[in-house]
Image (cartoon, rainbow, N blue to C red):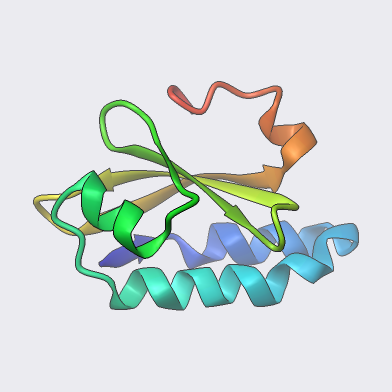
Length: 100
């Protein structure tokens, strides 16, 4: 899978020192995604059992011991993962993961 964009993830912990602890688990998630080859949401669930599959290719991942969430949109035919959001659970609670 091609994940877009690593810069969004880096900005999260670089621009917010209180989220520095997100760097390692986020990079680990990014590496796992880059090595994946998901053709369907079921493939995502096989690799990340705690991922939440939403409508229209949206997926929510819990990372960092469930401290942070990453929302992505996956274009399965082209094997591209677009990062739409990264934040704490509190930040996630105020967004609409389906439309962000």
